Structure formats: structure tokens, C-alpha cells
Image 1: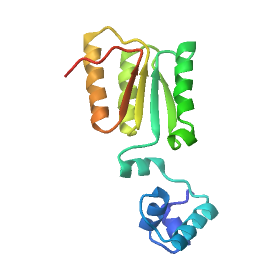
Image 2: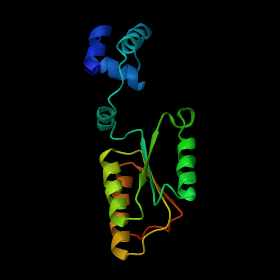
Image 3: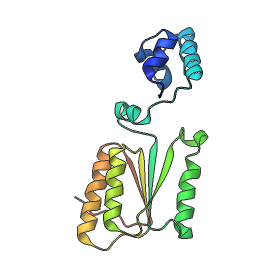
Length: 164
């Protein structure tokens, strides 16, 4: 059974809120308390619940990279470049997920919806755009929703989106 935040709190003799503060690093916590919490985390081998943390923070450590065909060397190079910029020492431990659309406009929109559900920190769209005005409008609407929710959006090798 997975170790919970409450388990860590009980082991350290503090509240779950204190454990959360120590792990987020955004709040002052006394040194002795911080040490007890971190020792309990290590002893119990606690791993932060990513989805719960994303829900609380309204963002996640996930970056979606949409490519037309991962087997195409161009897209592989693009995905690799994004990943190399996200190494823990550069990006605070972000995780890149490559979404292979196979050139399908529907799959592209589906992936964007899934990334929005996961509160992705960023989305990188690579490759040429589909020349369908209906898809361009749907894509622009999805990307506007992502951006409004705080997701960074990068278009790589794509024309600018139509205005609303």
C-alpha cells in the first residue's frame, strides 16, 4: 500500500499541512521540524502524489510535446531538444511526454485536452499545421484555454494562430 502524506505526518509528529509546507518549500518551517519531516519521508520512502499536488497547485511538472511522427528524425530531434532543456538542474524536474499524433487533427485535439486535464506546465506543438479552417479554429480555442489556465504554449514550425 502506498505511503500517504498522513503517514509521513504521523511518523514526524506533525500535521499533514506541515509536511506539505516542508515538501513544497514555499513556507518557513523550523529547522528541527523540517529535519524530522525529511527523515520520515526518507524512512517511509514517501513519493509525492503528482496528481494531488497538481490539483492543489493548479499546475503540474508535465510538458507535452506533440509531434506528427516520432520516427521522423526531425521530430525526434525536436523532442530530444525539449527534453534536454528540461533536465532537473535546468527545469526543476519537469517531465516531457511525447504525443505522437500521426498527423491526425483529431488526435492532436485529443492530446491537448488530455494535457489540459493534467494541468500541463507547457505544451510544444511541432510540425506543419493542418490546412483546415475548422481545425485551425478548434486548435486555437484549445490553445487559448490552455494559456488562460497558465499553460505555456510554444508553436514550433507552425504559423501563428488565428485571432479570436
